[in-house]
Image 1: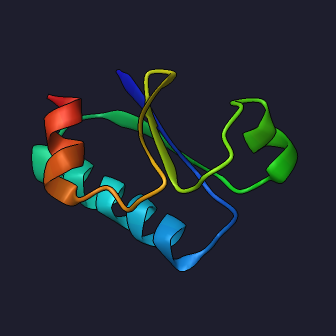
Image 2: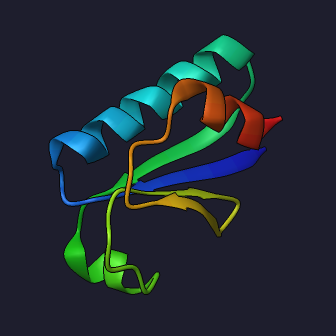
Image 3: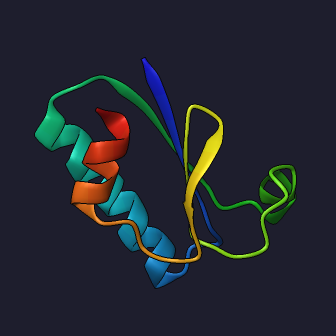
Length: 77
């Protein structure tokens, strides 16, 4: 099972990225562990300065912009 994390302090872009990730998982019909990390201390562990960040299986895939549903679907396939 894939692990997807969205890192961000709760800004509109971060919320949109998380919603897009939920929609991508729903459309693909796959099981994914989806996490939203808003805690600044927790985000600093990943050494990121720009948000939102989309991580798949511990690897940063997209940062600093909203990931589209189709982009996320491609990353999960």
